[in-house]
Length: 259
Image (cartoon, rainbow, N blue to C red; front, top):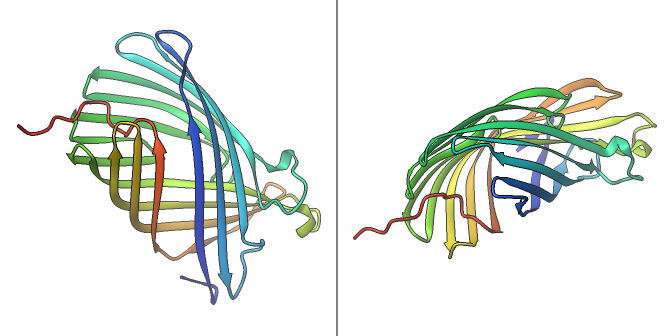
């Protein structure tokens, strides 16, 4: 993919650990630990850093079920995000705050609304949230929280799920003052992905996901001393990836094999 006469490619590596802790019959504490490494390979003009971006995420959420219909979730995340070319400081920290109210009208349908205050996509701004889970059977579901992600899933076999996905992601990285003449410089990266793939279920707790699709929008924004210095847009391009995780496989209703 070309950008200003050069080429740029991305390799993204992620790890995530989250384990709900029951505090009672109706309340769960949900800690989260995550790490992301983006390797930017460039030729021609560079993007202003050495090609390595790192982000560690520490999160904590509280979920409480008020009754059979209503559930509330509040939480936040923080952690350093930078090119790690100098000493870490408070300038490297990012943070998000989230609140969501969920209403379950039936075992098959839950919707919710709320808001997020997020600084990962550029300048800090409030973002409305809409959540949906429609799972009429253990073989078909539509779920997600807009604008973050939406999944349409079909499960033809107990061990296999086919899915279509749309997602918005990004992060804001602090760049070392040593490389930028003492200025407070950040690089915000955001993208929109459309794709599809499979989830292979090895029993109830081990799952392998393979995805491929198209990056329809990718944006870089350089921010110096809290002032935007303009945006760069990369042309669309293909992506592929895979993940392995342990826990629930994305379904709440049991799979019913044909008789």
